[in-house]
Image (tube, rainbow, N blue to C red; front, side, top):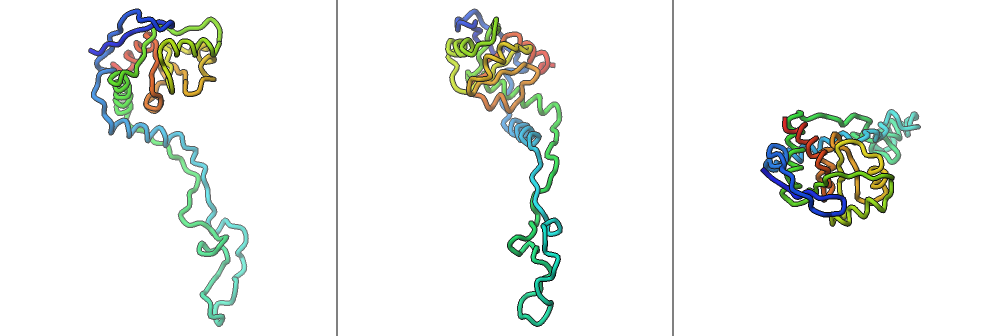
Length: 208
């Protein structure tokens, strides 16, 4: 059973936290991680790209020249795809890129992502994370005390408005509640800063 050090907001170690083997200690399955990340990126696509076919391009109603006797190739429209200013063949049209992978695969991928953070020493557990008022300097100070630099995903068990407001202006820092944690965000951010309550919340959902 993996265990990690637990810190307070001053960066002082206040104990250790035993993590669930079924959630934070599973073998990292790179194939499943790739499958779920590709799905998430596809689901974010707007799918609004559009090109015009020869039937949609303005003009081209008149035959450019007579069919025979000119010595040139036959042409029925100046909006043919082989002409400059003509329509586009096989171009993109609005479509829905969304699709789903099985729920079991998504859960396994999230477990793999969390386990990778533990194995790499990139999981930082806090006993609590709360501010009396929103202030960016307070969040910066906490991250400095924890030696967290670069990109970091800050996870709380429940929505913490003061935490969200304090972290949103810091480049590379993204606050999030436990129920919204996903594979893409975990892998995108170098560090995962999470409260003990959020750990329990994830274990309760993923450990079933």
